[in-house]
Each structure stands twice: as structure tokens, then as C-alpha cells.
Length: 106
Length: 529
Image 1 (cartoon, rainbow over the protein chains, first blue to last red):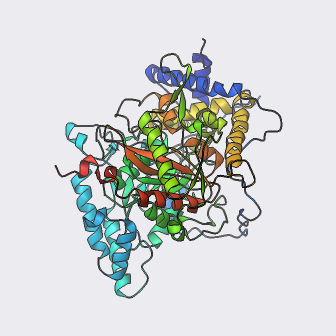
Image 2 (image 1 turned 60 degrees about the horizontal axis):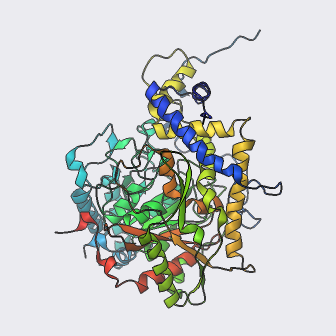
Image 3 (image 1 turned 90 degrees about the vertical axis):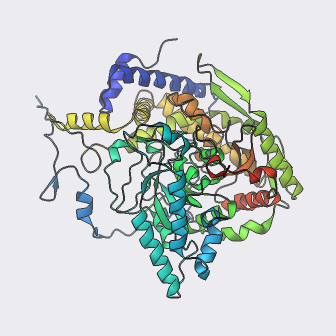
């Protein structure tokens, strides 16, 4: 049986996910992905008519159980410096990143 | 009995009455940790022979913070104030929750240097009730596993019952710390069984509450439609006590349900007379892909696990419950395939935020540009299991495949929910108050036996994951010991927000089996011979 996720498709996914792998890791991950897909393909046998809804979560939220929306009011953050301290690179209160790649539009 | 081996309920009572001080209790916890835990998990920690007989529950022990909390509890009691229902009770916290001012790592290199600037709601509620947080305990990286072995912080946790076995996962540090008597309570999370499966493996009680019963604020997200913070304890009463403190609406989490929190402690002594408890043949077998061929196989559960569940049913029948057999739960078998899709999509979405910009790890090298920085940071920062989940999540939700995979999985998720609705329907054919099932298809497996096989590892959650899809509450309680001397868990499942029914049945079972010989057996690390 051919693998659903081919080496080419795998490379495409890796690019989208912003990863990089050595050949050994890539082989392990691609093998596991294809094994998992075999398990997932069991679902193809489940008869589904059009009335079955998509479940985005299990427990229904009713009028009673859904919390009221919060009022849209501004609240100051009590410790912004503690949050900024976590950033790898900060200057004058700004988070610094390397150059952002630009693409010239023709 | 050593102080730290007593229940949270007993400890809090004694601390509140002044019979014990919170500092004394803390000292016994720290002594136990020093005796059994060994070195904490650390990045690139490797392993050495002396690790093999220790538990390694912890990543970060926050002794000074704990001592301050204990002193403050004692001061409040001295001043005649109410120090709370968990006064002086030591707790451990799965390192997937933020606790302000302490490292909050998710057991991942990508968050190894992250110090949380705020505290998760369940933790602040526990501390507000007088609990003393000992520190952060180990887990599978980002909770992605069923054995705790995938942690970037090694050595990973070992099972206190037999230290060459896994504690289960992903809340393995939590359940091991409770089983080894390092703390009577631990805070875990359950997305597919990550509280109940390790609770079964470690011989403790673990509750996955109803989705939305406990706030997820401050929990580092994995599967946002499945994640449930929940209590781990050594008995049902302590589990109920801990949930009482944590449950309820939270302005910081719009999915925390505005459903009133009942008096869980009052449910404990109600007994089971008149309750209908269901057994389902669909929970007495497992299906899993053959490691060699990939073909789906169907097998009945090991005899000892089946028998432990049936014995629990007999005990409950003797106590007055009506046992209803042959409840059909035909979609149980699809729990793992659906989970492979739904949880991966949610994981991929949640893990895109880790990019080396705002917090956490940033790779140290010269980058041409931002994109390359993302790539190197994520390649170095994430372990293989998170990467695998992200790749799968991106694939099955991609525009051209999402109807085939994601939409189909979400429809089958509705069918899984419908099985439970039919079983619990008060006007339906079965009308059960709860289902009784085994928690896991096996008892604790050996370290390295399954790790690396992501499919077989996921099937360890086969009997627990349906409750996550459906959102209903489930509890695992110890139900016996197998021939290898390892704990067996039995699981109870109830309708939405009916945790009290689980406590009522669980406590009745515990009381009725209190004198059983298997309950006298202690974990290996606590045996004196």
C-alpha cells in the first residue's frame, strides 16, 4: 500500500509548519503520520447521513450555562514589565525581531 | 501513619483545629520527597543507574514559596481566621499550569526559560483555600503522551509501584507524587485520559470533570475543546473536596460554565440504593492497529481487568445499586481515530504561538530574517511528539482534506456523544445514572516498551477518550491489584455536571471494599522491607 504522505508532501507540510528535520527524524515522523492516517481511515466506514451535526465540543452551552459577556471596559495590566521580561529581545519597551522578509509585488 | 500519608481532609481538619501546623505538614512532605523522588527532571538530564529506584515526579520544587504559604496559613489560624477547607494541605501542580513567578515549562525546551507572569485559576483557588503548592511536576511534553516519557525534562517520572514501569500520562508526575505520598493532592489535566489513565496506573483516584466545570485560565492549551483540569487524590472524599474548591464560573474563561457548584461532600454518604449503573460490552474489548501490519484487530481485555470491573459491579449491586447490562456504546471504537484528527487540529492551532518572539526559547544564531528565526527556534525548541501533532493537525485540516478528515471526525464525535445521551436519557431504554467500565486496556507498562510508537501509545486512552469527546465527567478509582502487583483502575462515567454521582458511587465502593486485602498493599517505594 502506498503512503498517503509522500516525501514531497511531507516536505511541504514541514515548510508550512516552519520546522526543519534531519533525515532520520523526517523518516520517523513520516512513518508515524502514515500509521496514524491508517487508524483515522477507520472513520471512512462510518455511515453518516447529512443530519449529523459537526460537534465542535461535547457539552452543549445553554442560555443558563453560558456565562454572561463581560462588559467592554478597559482594564490596566498590573505588571507589563513582568510580561516584557519574558521576551527574548526588548528595547525601549518594544519586542525586537529579526528583519521581516519582504516580497516585491510586480 | 505519617502525616503526609493521611488524607487531605484529615490534614486540613487537624491544621484548622491547631492540632498540626501547616509548617509541620510541609516538613513531612519535603522529607518524603527527599527520600523517594531522586533528582528532578531537567533539560538534557539523561539518566543514570541511581535514577532507577526513584520516582522523579518533580521538575521544580518551590520550597521557599511553599514555606511562606504554610507560615501564612499558620498565622491566619493563630489570628483566629478561617484558613480555608484545604488549610495546610500540600499539593503538586502539573507543569502545564502557570504559577506566577515560577517556571512553567509544559515539559518542553521551548518554554524551559518561561516564568509565568500570572497564576492559573484552579491553582489560585486551591491556594486561596489554604493549600500549599510544593512545586511543578513532570508530564509528557505539552501533555502529548500516555507515559510521561516524552518530557524534555529527564529523567521522566517512574511508577512508584514498580519503578521500571511508566506512571502513565500525561499527568504522570501528578499521579506518581500522590501515590508516593509526596502530597495528598495534585492538579492534573485530562484531554483524552491524561488524569484517569495515570491514576489507574498509579493506584490513585483521578477525576476528569465535565468540560467547563473547572476554568482553563492559565492552562497552557492543547485541545481547547477537550482539555479539563481536574483533581488527583488518594480517595474519593479528597477528590470531591478538591473539586469543590476549584469548580465554577470564571470571568477569565468564557467556556467555564455558569452552572452552580453543588455540595460535593454531601453526596458522599448517600449510598447507591436506587441508582442504575450500566455495563457495556463495548468497553470490554479493545481495537488497535497491529504494529506489524497496521490491520485493525479486536481483542477482549485482559481477564484481570475485566474481572476487576465485574467485581466492582457486584460490590455495588450488594450495596443496592441496580446493574444494567449490555448498554450499547457502538461508537466507542472510533474514539481514538476521531481524537487523532480533532486533537491534532487543535494542537497545531494552539502551538503556532510558540515562535521565539514574545516569550520562551529563541534559537541562538544569526538569522537572515524572521522566517528563519521561527524555523530554527521551533525546530530546536519542540520535541518530536509536538512536531508530529502539529504536522498531522495541519494535514487533516488543510482545505483539500478537511471535509474527508476533520469534518467527518467532528460528525463521528456527535455519534460518540449520542451513545452517552441514549444511555443516560431518563426517558430512554436504559436510564442509567452512570456507566462502569475499566479505565485502561492494560496495567502500567514497562519504560521504553511502547514509547516511540505513537499509534499504540495513543490506544492506551481508548477507554477514556470517549468522555472527552462527549464532554461528560469520568473518574478512575483503584479497583484491585493484578498478578504482577500493579494497580487496576475502574472508571465511572456520568451525565454532564453529575460529578456528585461519581463521588456517591465511588465512595460507596471504597467503603464497601475498605477491608479488602489488596488495599493493604503499598507501592514499592513506600515498602519498608
